[in-house]
Length: 396
Image (cartoon, rainbow, N blue to C red; front, side, top):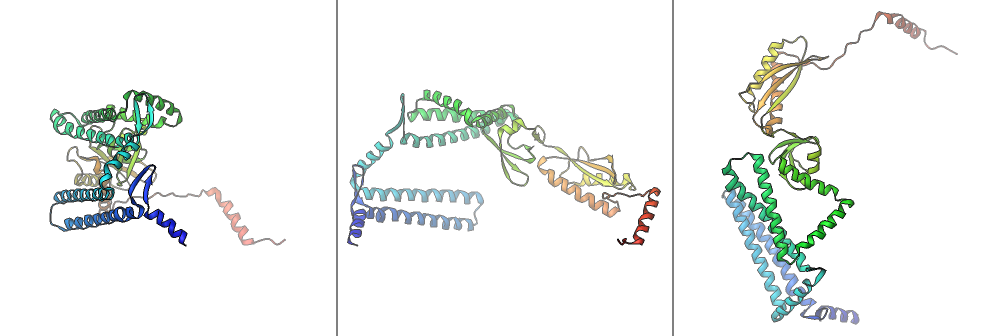
């Protein structure tokens, strides 16, 4: 027991060592003065953030003001959290914090890979995070500024705006990445090695990735679809939300998010219901029996199209006699609507009103039926069957 206490004492009470570097605190002091206070600070941050958010939501402010207040409160609390953690670390290390900072810097700055004039260390990999973050922000800012201050005044159509904005966005991102790589000390000539590795990787499973990237470029420049279009691809109908280099995000009519690889949009047939015009024609087919007054049925269906809240006044709805089928005559109501996003609502409204109108006027919507006619040549066979049933089973 005494040996166990001695071991625990050396572990928790002796100064900590990392290689040749000795810290002025023990493991017990690290737990009591840094780890536990940090846990308490984080818990307090969570509780304060949740409480203040509930107070803001219960206030009578507008939604925009609520969102802004919550954002600023969260920012202030995070700043306080960062200052508290920094003060705890400085208190624990004391006056020798500069020495430990230099040691940590030397460790993370030690090159892991050296190639020519490029040295890649842990610090270099850490600096890649802000570089790519700034590249994304630069692309977003370029897109917003171009769309807000330039393209809106030129008077281009939406498809051309999309192409120009996407091109400028990706150009800004590439330039930011190249400048950032140069600043953190990565030789851009080493990118040739990267492209060589990429060429080798094409034979090991990157064909689809590269194909999707080039398909994304083709979509951006040829504009078969654009953000906001209502499309049908692979039995999925929805609105295009975002077009990226690798994939396209589609929000379906059932509010499902579908991520479609760009290659499928190029290789497959895509129905773009709003390519250059968001108007479409609704088709509502319905059968009536052969004894129906077609003129009356056509007039009732035309009135349904005229009263549809999603329909255009011009062109007016039209009714066509589509076909003569086994169970009845098929009539089709054609209704123009202003926006393709109202397609399902408009179809449902027409179907319901057609059914109500036919019910009130006594017009029959037939169901499939078959008539069976027995020829007289079957009578002898039927008589034999009756005789056989009268005789009953034969005894052996």
